[in-house]
Image (tube, rainbow, N blue to C red):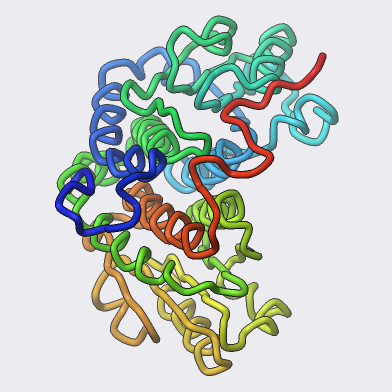
Length: 359
């Protein structure tokens, strides 16, 4: 299912944000196809890198964190994520390479018009750092100043908060990372994402049902490459419903933050791959302490001992390849919770689609 016309998700059908999120499957497929045809210039630019900096703001920064973690694991070279503001205000904290020519910067921006993104691309290129723009708008200012541009052709959207743009740009960059690292399994698993989209839809249905409860606090747990996805879940919940939300590495949650567990708290675990059994035990402890739990597992085996609600998403796929499928369930939970709390997620307070700062 790629939209809500069959009524499986009543209450969200009138939301532009939901309708656009519901087309993420097609946007992912288009982005993977575009990466397969158009990635050669970017791969050539990145192939000789001694260190790669990936940057963005807001959701794009969390996307950068996912890509940087995946790059370290798959390409086996230093990938580092930094917010755009660091590259503007304190570049020495993000740029450490001895040769700018061997330290490319990947700049992610849905619109390609965000002030910081354009300024970073201009400054990095002027300083000798090769720049790769990743955007949903081929004619944007960012695309005009970068050395190379990668475009998610079906990722653009009208909604204020990012939905299909995030999932599709992530799929695009994971394809580039797989080919940079020569990871054939990841490349094949990414090809399977469009056919596995119904699993994301099923998980989203459960997320909508959970969103009918007005939770006092929500905690999202994700390790490795999934940590950036967990942070994006938290941002979506904060943007749309203003519920108190935090993201943690699963085992780090036990080192203090687990004290928030009590009735009225929802703990979500994005669990897959190495360490899944240990991470499920953290969810089990949270449940024993009174919290409600929802586990999005990568296989039925990983979910067998999980407490509370369980959704299996991306069974058989590598833990990295399944990540774009985990974004749509976050939107279902966030938008349904916003409606429960009387908020309009199509018009989140204090927010606009593009951040333009005064010079």
